[in-house]
Image 1 (spheres, rainbow, N blue to C red):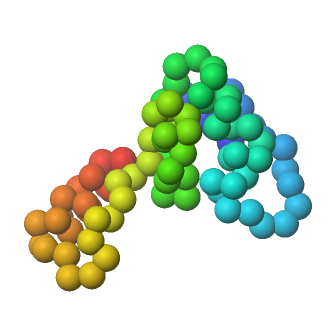
Image 2 (cartoon, rainbow, N blue to C red; image 1 turned 45 degrees about the vertical axis):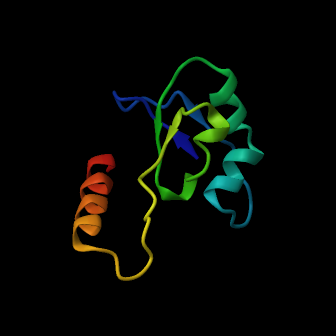
Length: 89
């Protein structure tokens, strides 16, 4: 797991671990959530694999929006979701 700043520098990089692991689990295991919650103010843009960590990091972890409708979403809702998701990217 690598954290980069806006200039492309790498201020933090986690050690490698064997096997597969979900992003959110790995972030908790290596202490990234605690580092963000207790450390200096920083905003980390993350992919959907980290959804749910914002509450555990004091709002420092920013992920794409959740999909509110699973099936048969109104067209306006799908368009809004796509705009928000692309803006985050």
